[in-house]
Length: 609
Image 1 (cartoon, rainbow, N blue to C red):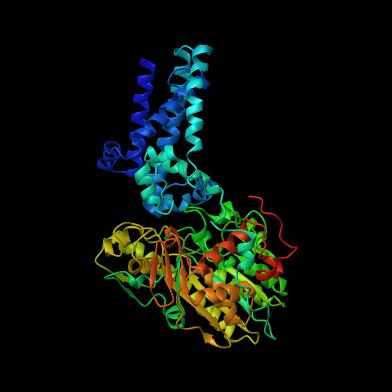
Image 2: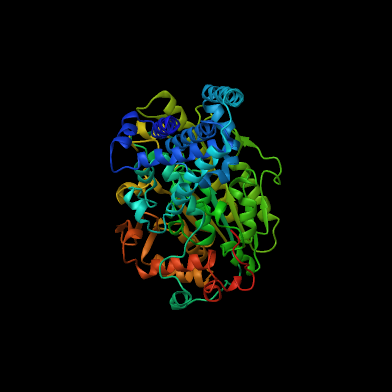
């Protein structure tokens, strides 16, 4: 009995510490355990079972705590940091790109060196203490009897197996409902706040599997209205260049901020509309996914990253289509090739080549990263050396955060704002990088104006920059990051980045308004005079009704917003068919390929994720 009580107490203290570290708020943590309709004490029971089962496996009392405590407390700390800087809690799938966090450490260390030193010392000291305690505990604590170990396992394993069985959020569980564990996958902040870090983290494990949407079937795909257009090309095939500029945004939108001279005059003069990003401050790969496929993150589990989880075989893309029409399809990014799993994804998208840090010539840096000017040089050099029509997709790197003060020694702008010196210097670093991106577009446009071959250029930022305290001090945001769910009039300025679509034959496209990245293929191909059953046919019909298809909001072309549309019983049939087609081509039998993606017939293999 004493052992059970001590294990229960240890579990309670551990769960409390996990919540305290993750939430960073003592009162909120206490409130989580005091409210009878929150699953805090259910979590304590679950941890007690885990600790007792591990003791039985390891053979000594309380030794399971030495495994569980360091692991879970570390996860809670990482989760708190991610929520603070990116606005999202920690998901199980985040570990698929943990290497990218390591790759960004030099930038983080440069911004906060003493914090980095303290973390390094703490990790080394913690590991040393853990090893010492482990060895001493095993030396001094007697082994459990085999009978005692079997009894513990016989009690704990069935109960743990039952817990696992009720954690699939996609299916209803009477027991889970009685325990007040309510999966809120549409609002992950509330999911973690209501269920606690451990249970919410566990609820997100099944996101690795995407279930078929309600009503999906072969008949449902066959019933979708057939596209009225076929693949076609102009007599002279136009070259297409898409530049997705890292964190490009208009910093003059910050309240009370004056930046001299204007950091983005060329984008401002050519601006076609706004790209409505599904992300804030990060997750570049999710914007890439929509832009290159014409599919939407809105139909995938919250927190998922298709590049990491779901692109495991060839799927339809703009590159795949244009390649089938005789184009050279190339991707260019002056970062490492494994970042966001781009090497494998670009191959599955049909790109002929991917030029990255590993294969590009040495690129001049501006600040700590490869400059936008050097990337523009590479685009022009590649274009001038390509005889066939080409499709280039380029992702810049220079203006990646964090925006440490004094990143550039030769700044050409001044910032005036009623904010701290640190925030002002950080904003200046960002504005200088945005200005360089703007100059890169200017040079690309001037080069294209002199070309005889038709050339279409699209330029946009993938998301707002992670400026953190700058947003708070200027009053643009209440916190360092924007909320995932907020009214449409607040959501728009927090997710819209400048969009330019320009042709050397017709000039800039104008008055597009906000555009989901999934609709960019339609607008770009239309400007190029190219048609396709899905990209200009199906998406063309859909964009007549909706400008933005976001996880939390549908924005109609007249500006009306439909909030929380995915939770409604009835969904617009056009949006429903959009979801059906995406699931069919990514996870299903690809029954719609012949009608909507004829270039992929007999070229795609079964999904393997």
